[in-house]
Image (cartoon, rainbow, N blue to C red):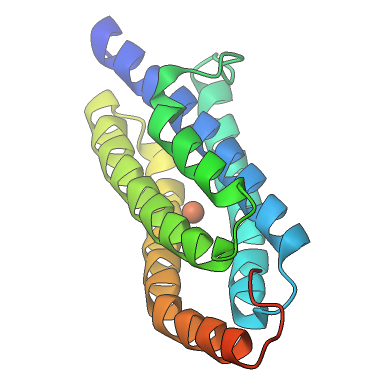
Length: 169
Ligand SMILES: [Fe+2]
């Protein structure tokens, strides 16, 4: 394959890998803290398991390209890092901020896989395609799940708050 396309592909693999590591950090941190929102916790737990598989697919593709995950926490994570920081700041409405961040994050990841799949095709690495299409499907499903969770989560937040109960997470 042309060297420049290969370079673009490897960079996308590394960036997507870094993105998945960030995703794991964000989700694990939320699951640890969640106490009163079992549906959100269950969705995150399921997706943490899927994300391990997504990370493995990326590492496999990097190895096939004789490359490895980047050790740099690059600027590509800037926006997601800010979202993560927002989600991790203790606040009365922590659960709502997490619900927003989760919805944004999963859609960002789905877009990243759309681009990665396009680069995988351009690079001719057909062995990796099925796996990345599976990852894209998982991201889109999780994006829908967390989108659907915003309203019930908000209703529960209202219910707990008005009952004078702990509602923040
Ligand atoms: Fe995801």
